[in-house]
Image 1 (tube, rainbow, N blue to C red):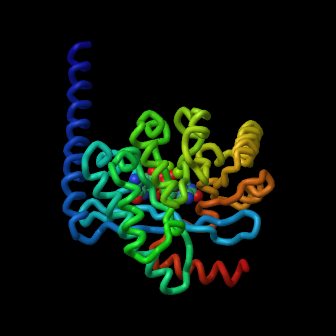
Image 2: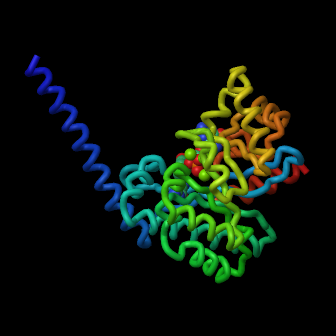
Length: 281
Ligand code: C2E
Ligand code: MG
Ligand code: MG
Ligand code: MG
């Protein structure tokens, strides 16, 4: 009836209102955090080669520890920033922090490429590739040590500016990964239109690899196809030994996931690397 419908509508409005208020608060707080407050930091997750077990690189992922609201997941706050100019500020923050860390590690003899996640709005920024090349040089590093993980592939394809930005990054010598392959529409034609080195298979398509026959068939053919096109294939979100072994059999090149390690702070990652090297090589 009309009254209960009205109640439902009001309840919905109140909820969305509270949600919007929190969105606004997060955006507002994030701005102040970007400008010097501690609480933002990077964690790093190792990528491991399936043939020889060597660590091939690291992915940098942002973390935000809010003093009152606790840890806020990137999936919560990044979509909010995506609609604002704060996205560019976040990416710049991540890139500066990653380059600073790569430089520190180089000084300690740890030479591992680190990849950062960038969205379509970053790729469309005029001069993005040049500014990255300049920053990398300023840190005394070769571009091969910084990787770019391209999010939102479908939207990149729709934007001539973003595609151009990606091509410029490739020309400057950065390694390009296509993130989250297998989600969204996965328009196969984008493989021919985008300059990619590494394809990252999303966890959603590999998580049932060892329990579902159809999933095994799909992943197996996807890997064969991508290998035939000369891509390096990395599987994300590998959590157990069985999935790891199965991916090795299917000819996948690299894995990343909790099976090897959660994303770790720089300090914890160094300890992890030492332990991993002594037990695996
Ligand atoms: P992504 O780039 O696909 O990153 C992989 C996500 O999977 C990370 O979540 C990682 O912690 C998680 N993960 C890794 N191994 C496993 C596993 O074995 N099992 C499961 N269930 N999950 C695993 P996180 O750090 O919460 O990031 C989520 C997404 O937020 C990222 O997906 C990326 O799209 C975005 N993101 C994170 N950091 C940044 C950043 O610095 N900049 C931008 N633009 N986006 C970021
Ligand atoms: Mg990524
Ligand atoms: Mg991914
Ligand atoms: Mg993802």
